[in-house]
Image (tube, rainbow over all chains, first blue to last red; front, side):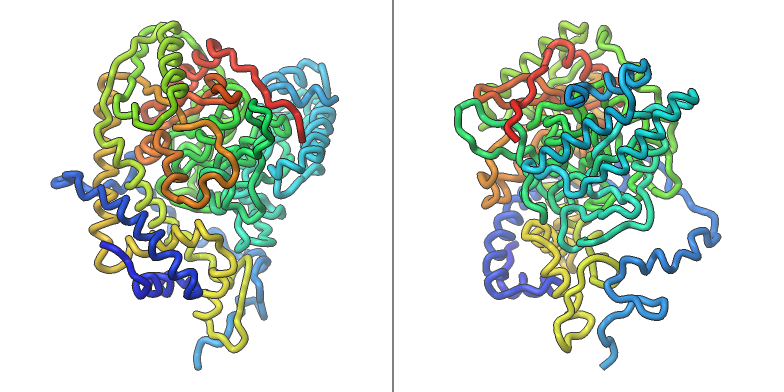
Length: 95
Length: 493
């Protein structure tokens, strides 16, 4: 499997990364180089092997279903590039 | 009190307790050393007042008999630990100006143990790199130079490059690092210091800027094995705020230190004898084997058959998790925002991320997004998770035959800045010996073994069973006692 400029543009769009034509051109061989290298995993027989999900065996805990971190609105907003009226402000979403 | 900065963390702790010097004198000495070493570019933020406040508290505690384990000790903190009110940027432009309104669990624990903070340490952007050259703040310069009379600037390794350089240069007696695929161990090896990555889950990830969550693990870096044991004890422990935190008691690692390895079996994996590794590194490995034998251990050859697939597995899993984790940098909640005139929300996301991320981070986000995208998920990501299971199984089977594994830490000594930046794959190969233990979640440590022909440090690498940090530390101590590594870089900065 290898990528071309159209694929790189598509992936960049999925990743929300604005890219110039020159950047796209440069990434095509770089990504193909890396993807070609990871391709060697296809040599490994993994039939019957479950994908590893938890590296150290443990049971995921459930916390009590209670709100325990509320009342920190101002702290949450403190680092926002644009906070207005107690909300995050963003450019217009609805045309 | 310049000489205080040449002491180990253990010596500082014990000397302070014995009344040989005050915590204030220690903090003054290190603050001055930090200010005098800016040419290394190791710190991104200096916090001398923090170190002094903790020192004054330690001096008062000594009077009142209320000493904590790290009273009097100032530390450097890698810049991906959230520190309340102090810039935390993870080496990235996209987090410019971010001042966390909370403190990470690990640094909270260190503070509760009495430690102060000297400042935040430079690192590869989002810990993605092996040379510290991907930092938005520019590379850290290693305090080490080659002995060839040249003046080439060398890398301290990465991603915990500022951390490693700070300990090697004596501008911090101990530091925090994080290790996703070797980011504590490789820089420790490159700078002639010790560093341990504990079992995955030992140290809480809460408040650590995420890179690849199934691999990220914090650990200490310092001058000696005992220093590391002391720091790791203070950093570890169950944290309900991290869903993968291990609910296990923290052993008294310092008290348990013993370099008597009688009855221990040390595995030597034949697959780690790889082409292109300098003879000096293999010779040091043989020397390490001899040292461990001398300490009473028996040596057994073992096989880890999937070793060669560890790096490609890592370079699917880590970018995949990174592309997901780094989706949070959207210009809305914190950090940089770039909003093109008249652009919509999507345009703001794309412009912010384009301006805020560096080339290596973008490359990994692209790889990760690709391997997770529709049609490729099973072929890449699920396949890699299956191979990861086999790599883990290799270790489980090997630990039927041995108690610990000894390998070199890195396939070369420190290289020059700029030498590998043009070739991502060559850079990734730095972590060939470090990555398998990360994929298996195992504790692993680098200890200095000696110098190469150019006068640069080389490290030896110990891997232990899950939760057997004690075994790793003890074997590290046995090597440390026999290597007698006391070399320090000559001060030029």
